[in-house]
Length: 151
Image (tube, rainbow, N blue to C red; front, side):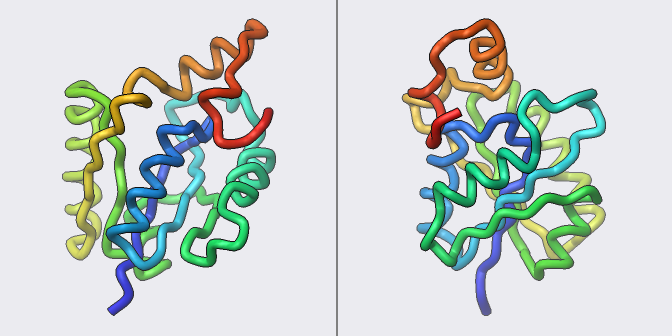
């Protein structure tokens, strides 16, 4: 049976930390679906979804084991639709774990076939968050080192 994993997130923007998680996930799964979701707790995106889709697809061009999709539904429902039995989540710290653990439990309740796999962020990316990248970019700072593509 093919091991398919969904890596969900708002990816606003998709960082080198996210890229690292995808590359490491390819050692565990046959296929990784990067699911760019609409987060109901975030009012507006900083980077347009279409721009992120294009940029992320460019990073994995030629790698048919990585797909990039946009979704606006429960992540557990999305996983069923794509026959994915795994969700991938990166953890930078214990605060991330507390938040992700709660979501993981609910996803498991909604889809009993779904396992969440937590990968600890590589040390060089532990301080990088999309929120920090947006703020630096907004005020004209150089974020090239933190993104796997030019903005």
